[in-house]
Length: 239
Picture 1 (spheres, rainbow, N blue to C red):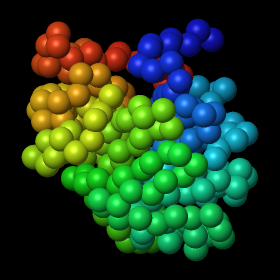
Picture 2 (cartoon, helix red, strand yellow):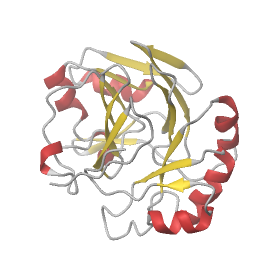
Picture 3 (cartoon, one colour):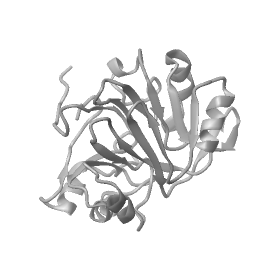
Picture 4 (cartoon, rainbow, N blue to C red):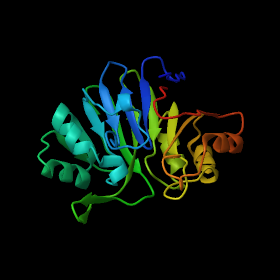
């Protein structure tokens, strides 16, 4: 299988599992998973559906397409799970011991990786058997790696005015934004997010998984113009 590689930073590697899920290798070799819908993700390449190692798992919110495989992977790997307090508590209730709950505005450090939970405009209900339980509020993430490389990982969200504050408060090297429409921002609304954030490198996600998710990277690139680089990716690509 040919894997497309696009340069953002030569010490940090992001692999798109598909939808909103990412595998990340940090600057000092830590293995991260963000929003782990992995084994049951319909667009994930087969070689990414087996997780042998995870040091840190980050969860933006509790919808099934972002948390479905979190407990199983955490149980298998013994990783630390970081999420907003209520979601972290739910993960802990399933027998996972290494959980770390936070809240918006707070920064937690994990072996040199600094994670700040930030606002997102979305809902957060966790499907637990035949019930939907409260998972706290949906979040975005600002992740600063050991070498200072910093990303804004928006999770599922609409555009909101305080994205400007996120860009002002953090020196962002890249922004990971949903563009699919229907459940999150469309390319048109994501273009406004790019303007507010002020970041020149954008990695789109949460598109193409289902027919309803119609937004595409080329549409966002056309809207933001040549001053911003929008990566055109597919599941399995590395950036």
